[in-house]
Amino acid sequence: MQHLGGDEARSARGALGAAMKPSILVVEDEPALAELLRYNLEAQGFEVRLGGDGDEALMLVDEKRPDLIVLDWMLPSISGIEVCRQLRRKSETRAIPIILLTARSEETDRVRGLESGADDYVTKPFSPSELIARIRAVLRRSRPALSEEALSFADLAMDLTGHRVTRAGREVHLGPTEFRLLRHFLENPGRVFSREQILDAVWGRDIYIEQRTVDVHIRRLRHPLPELGGRDLIRTVRSAGYAIDAQAAKAARG
Ligand code: CA
Image (tube, rainbow, N blue to C red):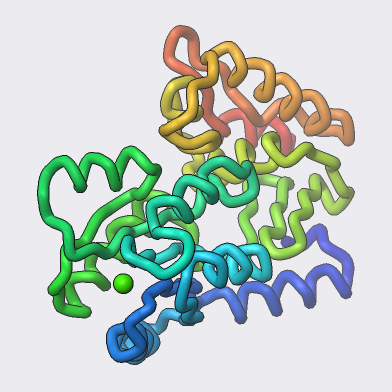
C-alpha cells in the first residue's frame, strides 16, 4: 500500500477499519425469529440488515451488496427459492453466498433448494449457534479474505470498496470479470487453480461456461497488468491451471 498517495492511502485505511464486520442480510417474514437472529449475529460481530419479504430482499441487495444472505424459503410475495434464482442470474449478485432456511426437510426439497443456487441449507427449528457455525463455514469457503477490504500482492493493490486496482500506484482498468478473477487470485496467492475451479469461483457453479472462456479472461487480465511496467504476475501451470505467483512477484520487483 506504500505506493498509494495521501488521499488514497487514507481511504484504504478507512475501508480496512470499517471492514472487520461481515454484513449479513437476513430475509425472514417471522419478526420474532428475525430479531432473534439479528441479536445473535450482532453479538457475534456481524453487521445485520433485515428484510421481510422477497421483494424487499432484492431491493436491499441492490442497495448494498451483503457478504452473505440468510434466506427463508417460505416468504410472502416472491419465495426464497425464486429470490435465490434471480440473484444467481445477475452477474453482480451471482457470487453472494446464500443459506436457505426452511421448515421442509425432505431430501427432494433439499436438492431443489441447492439446485436453485443456495450454498447451504438449514432446517427449522435450528439454534442460532448452529446457523452461525454454518455462516462462518460458508464465508470461509467463499470469501477467505472477507475481513479485508483491500488486497495486495507485490506492487499490485486492489481496493474492494472502491473497485479499483493499482499497480505501483497507477490505476489499472479491468472489466468486471477480470476484477473478480484477479480478486480470486489475490485471496489465494500462490495457489494453482484449474480452469474448472476458476469457473466455479468466479462465474458460479450453476451456469455452464466453456473452460476456454477462462483462458480468454486470463488473457484480458494479463494484458493490462504489465503495461505499466513490471512483469506478468499470472503464472500458467501447464495442464494444471493458473496462479498468481510469488516467483513472478520477485521478478516484478527486481
Ligand atoms: Ca417464512
